Length: 352
Ligand code: AMP
Ligand code: MG
Image 1 (cartoon, rainbow, N blue to C red):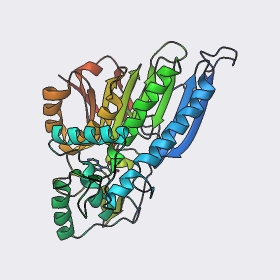
Image 2: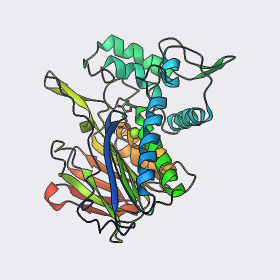
Image 3: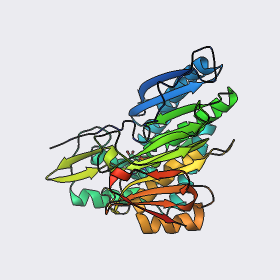
């Protein structure tokens, strides 16, 4: 049996988001809302403030133009051209995003690697024609992925034949960073953006309390009101990676879309989801950081993820790890802002 679950609102059941708007006369509490499909997921934006209507349409335009630029299914995108083996002059934005991706690859010892594209294709995750590939093909592609680096050439950047990149593990977090800048420039006082598992909680809720962002219970993916717990967030990013977000079943086994570049198979690390949380700081790229790390930590598993977090990332981000054996492990910085859903059956551990 084959099956796809498209990523829906994942983190983003924003409790109390609707139905609490004051009369439109008060721009600080009146809400402008849109939902659309982009980057292969459902996106929801809710904006407040004087400039909410024009900012909302600018925000949607921004996401659509990033989608066109970063997609590997749009034939004309720079990424597609690179993947066809063409030499491409990268513009500043793509150049710096690809440099960031290379940095995250090194910093996560290869757990995050945009070069997984040929593997993702052979598993069918780009075309929705899922299959469990032949083990020898997987081993061959693991080597290809390992050797995938963009090279400089006189005509621009270039990949070797057979190599390809996929920005799916980082693009939505990058889009969240760009949205935050747009909200700041347009003086949006409060907003909630949910980009398929990537949430930006901007300002406070209209009643002055923090936004409430649900961490989906990975064990109950079909029930979008089933949470492992709730995060209270203000001016922050929360990005979740989970096997339940996209998968298929074959021969009684589940195969999901987050691949371990070291094995070529879907990561099987004992985690069912990873949420990475960071505060917004102007000019920083913490949405992108959260996105790359959520994918990488999901691949690494609890022990290695926490070791890496302690060593390199504990000043910038906090984590919610949901484990296969029924625990929710949060890092100390979230002790006040994470509330376990008592009915979920998970036990809570706080680590530092
Ligand atoms: P995310 O939902 O952010 O964890 O990203 C998952 C998406 O990133 C997948 O659908 C692939 O497009 C891509 N991907 C899968 N495995 C990896 C990996 N190990 N490193 C980087 N990107 C990946
Ligand atoms: Mg990611």
